[in-house]
Image 1: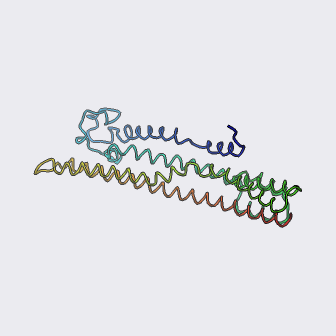
Image 2: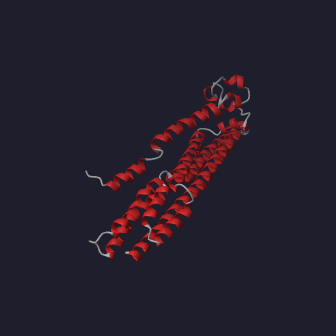
Image 3: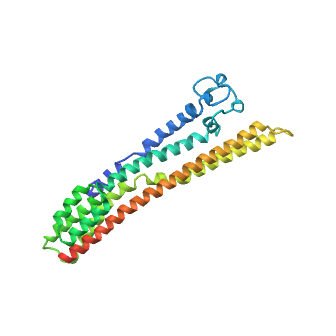
Length: 285
């Protein structure tokens, strides 16, 4: 099967960055370890000496007799949904840092607005070689797309086999292909942030429902005298999961919108210069 050069470049860009299929399982293991050995550390609970060492999860003491003494212990009492929500939070943080560095690299060196103004000024003077030098110095996604467009511009300006309309079509196609090559790198892993912004709330709701089920079960299981300890445990479990889920979801949504705005800014700059390249070509050729 033959693969075009452009297809190979797209695959290469998609392969860059963090691989979710590898990273997320690792983060899940880390999340479980945090739940068991950080939140579940006996030091976070009353009568720590009776709970053994390592984690209260491995203690012979019943869960209803384990009472938190610190905020970490309170979070631990949120139940089995907590390590999942911790994993979500860590995932949001890790992939946010990854997007931050990738988009920072894509923005290139120097001020992007100044780069756009400089290239447009050079295009208005038909100084293509100088504009190409600016692209080499910029070293970002915008510079890559503009460089491809200008390289095609330069080649088409010396082509005598095509008419002007055909040259414009070829130039536009080259710019579109160059933009398509850059987009996978910019948008990769953004879906993870958007998905977690929704799923974290749903998983938290599941934890809330489980906690309320336990609370109502405790309310009715004691006959005329409800088990106050079990009742409070169920309610606290519900609220802990709600808080973790809402917090994770809010952070994911905010960061997703932040990175989306940065991507939109880069694509706007690309479109702005692409229009200038086409106008310059139409004017000088």
